[in-house]
Image 1 (cartoon, rainbow, N blue to C red):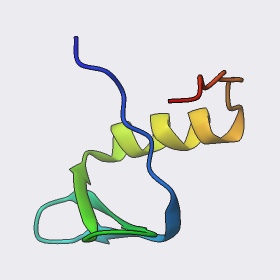
Image 2: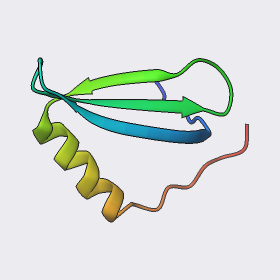
Image 3: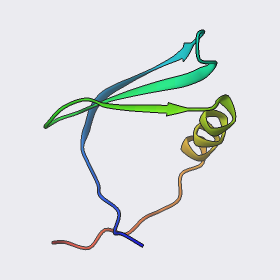
Image 4: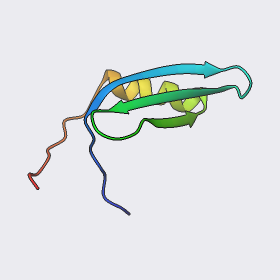
Length: 62
């Protein structure tokens, strides 16, 4: 499995696509191009639950 990448996020937006019935998440990192993520409403709800109760993650210096 590939390693996880950490990015600094400047801002983000989330919207429901009526045509697709999907949730579109736009992430604007502090550096680089915007990232667009297309997910189901179930996936978005699961992500929201994880954001409400984040887990402590230890980052090692690189």
